Image (cartoon, rainbow, N blue to C red; front, top):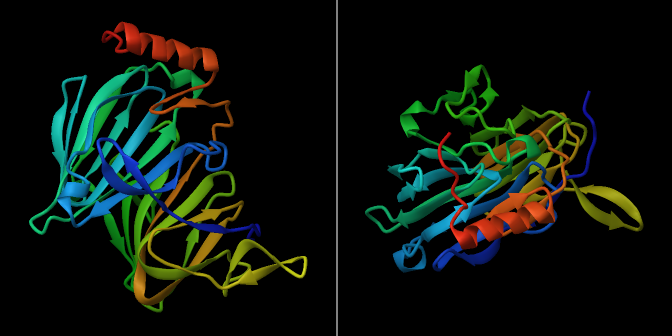
Length: 303
């Protein structure tokens, strides 16, 4: 049985962040309940180092977790816990900001000057907002990949899929984070849980996304003659596809195949007070965090 739902598609929008990094934002700094528990998703890529190498100098975070996934180039990382490292192609970094962390992320191009990566922010529940900060780097070779008979390839970054479990765990949002490639012309159905919020982000090629009850089209937020209709949508590069309460999604790959991230998580359903890199539950907690930033008590001593 499939629970029919609306699918919505939108394009990531050009955004300038950090010290002048040109990126595309799929969502963020709008309605935090829309893709709860996820708050923000950025796609940073480019062929011109002058548009990304100024990076993201030292800045704070509190109340969230970040998952950074690098496809090309490297990202040098340093934080107030004393961690340093470099993410290379295929590597993942998971950071729990918790009670507060300061860090910087500095991207660099590969030999051809190319850089590509993603960053996802996941909210922390109120019970873990002030947990001790944590950090983990996962190398590409540690991330399992499963390959189906039809050529479909899935890298399991976080969560479990087709009998494989990703190496990143302990994330409060209990996400599933998959890097999926479906070959040209192949139709593939993926299971979803209608208890979780899910989205896909297309970053190579194109595909039509549909729930199992309407495999020839995507049910969009559109009306014709006052009635909702199924229309076929070939969602291409930098397209966000938001799923409603569906138990399955069918992907029909386009002429060159499609590569996309398929991400889902358990909604927190909690109030959100958000200012820049700090996400709390109340305005009072937010003001306290800003006060601590100003008086130098933002970083808590290790327990």
